[in-house]
Structure formats: C-alpha cells, structure tokens
Image 1 (spheres, rainbow, N blue to C red):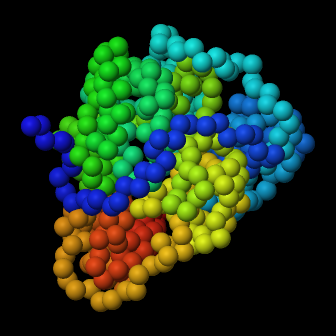
Image 2 (image 1 turned 90 degrees about the vertical axis):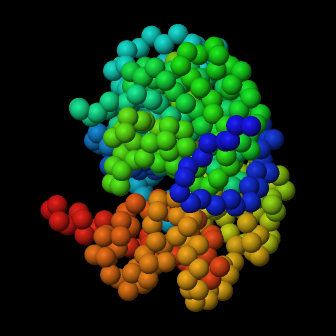
Image 3 (image 1 turned 30 degrees about the horizontal axis):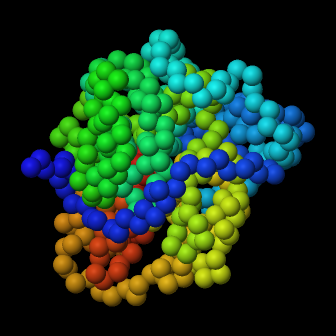
Length: 445
C-alpha cells in the first residue's frame, strides 16, 4: 500500500467542514456599484489612471502598476467613476479606492468571451510574462504576490520544476476544489503556459486526499498534457504553505530567509493558473474570481464567480443573508483569515472565502497558564518554539525574537489552535514579526 506524501515537521488536522464542496460555481449577479482598491497585492499601490465622472468598460485598466513589485488594476464592470477616495477594506484600514456605478455590462472588445478551449500557446516565454504583468495577475491563494515577479527568475537561479498548489488545506474553503472540477482543461493549459514561461519540462499538482473527485478527474485529463503529474497528499494543515508543499512533493527544504527558487522550484496556486490561462489565451485581465461563501448557520452555502470590488455584504445577501446569531464574519479560512469589522468591504483579488460563524463558535476560550506541554513546538511546521516567541513578544524582547527566527513564522495558527491553555500565541508572534521587520528595515536605511 502506497503511503501518501506530506511534509515532515509538525502540522494539525482541524475539522474540515467542506460543506460547500458540492456547490457548483455560480455567477453572482452584477452589483449596483463596485469599490476597487488600488492596493490588492504585495508591493506598491497602483497609480490611478481615471478621474471622477469617467466612463469605463469591463477589463479597462484603471490603475497602473507602480513598480516591478506591483500590479495593474482593471475595472470589473462598465459604468461611471463615482468617486476616488479612501475606503475601508478587509484589513480594517482605509485605502485609496475607485468606486464605479454600474451601467450595463460592456466589455473591452479585445477580450475573447467565448468558452472555446484554446490549447495552442503561441506567445514566447517573455511575451507570456509581459501579458501576465499587463493582466494584473497575482497569487490567488491569498498571498497576492505579483505573478510576473515569480516568473522572472533572477540571474544565477534556475527552476527545474513547477509546483501547482491544489491543496486548499484551510477548513471550509472550496473555491479551488470547484475550479479544479469545473475548469480542469483550462487549468492544464494555464499550467503549460507557466511551464513555458519558466522553461521547465515538469509540473506537479498537489491535492489533498479529501478531494478524490478532483484528483481522479485531473489524473485522467493530465494524460493529454505533456509533463504534468497529479499527486494525492495526506490531509494535514498547513500543507498549502509553499515550503510545506515543496517538502511534500519533491522533498526539498527552502532555507530560512530563502525563496522556493533557491532550490529550483516555483509555486503557483490553481486559481492563479486558471487566471493565467484567461490572460494569455483569452486576453482577459484579472477582474473576477471564485469566492466560497459558507458557514454552518448560513441558509445556503455557495461558490460564486464574483467581480472584484463587489461588497462582501452582497455575497452574504445572495447566500440568504446574515443570521441573527452571527458572532463573526471571517475573510479567508478560519486558521489564517481575518475577522471583518464591517461586511461593507470589497472583494479583492485575494478573497478566497467568506465564512459566517455563530456566536458560540466565535468566542475565544478562557486563557490559563502555560503548562509546558510543548505541543506548540511539536506541531509548528517551521520548527519554531511558539511558547518562547509568545513570552518574548509579551516582554517586547525583539532582538531575541529575531535570533529565534520569528520571521520564519508563516502565521498558520497551528500553535494557537493546539494550545490546551488557549493562549493567543499567534497574536504576540505577529506583533514580534512586525517589530523585527521594522528593526531590519531601519538597519538598511
């Protein structure tokens, strides 16, 4: 009997709660207006190109990338620019945002809106990267790192394998699962485009074994696409982390402070690969994505194809509305997502899911003292000592936190999840990461 692959250090197994897994992707009706932030990605905010009163079309660029690590922003609707102002987003902060009143649904004529599958890849590797940059593609697994940067391999480095993340290890989320089932061929072509851009002959798709239908389907169609393999992985959180997925699939370890390209790998999410297909083969910029809307108390769960800038409150309304006993609404998964202070915030490129929790599910348990059980150490996928980092964070001993490699923490939340004393370990680790990052930046100035 073959053992399923997985990563070696730590990991936990929270309840999966994939209650929307059987919900096919539905197109959410157009909202009356959208609010599109110009900073939806890692890096510099895009520079605004439109003014109040301007008419725009679907797919029109409305904010230009402001540097190498930045991304273009496109209108997701046709209509009139109503305002350009600082608007609250899912982070809880106000950011420059272009609000557009929707009028009809007029697309840029250059976008191929047919459903025909286009397998023939005609662009060169450099032209592929250029097109992906122009289309504003970023990592759709949640990191939102500009994809063209990942594909621009630095001098002296070389990729030999592309890894595709179909793990979706966060409980509740099912948007990637549905995409693999419903857009399998487009995904495969997107992977071949990424392989061509990187000049690699091999791609591995990693999918956790709780999605057997997606694994079986992609294994069947992978035979039509040269160099692509599908691998079932043991169900273990946080296997969707880049470093954990690389370890699971090719048994290589990214060094502390390093990047996947340092060991010859590049990782992209399945949602990103699908967006790459649409950008390169259909000339379609990234202005919509699949978002899971779920929760045990929602009248119905769903996986919606949503225009960027649509209000989260519109998604929840489409799913039957916010129940009276709602305790918390989370943007993203329950392990790494963030609670929203207000549902009147826009869906962005990084919005993979919205989860509604009942009051009793959302309350933190009462803290007690650390009993030195070391569970947080044994389950940390990065080999850190969360109990120690927590103490150092409380005492604001940031130089020691740097020595203890706090920046290696991926904020997966496994330590807080497993702690029998219910200590908010990750809260103080996040504080320490922010302060240590400031200290490091100040040394460079």
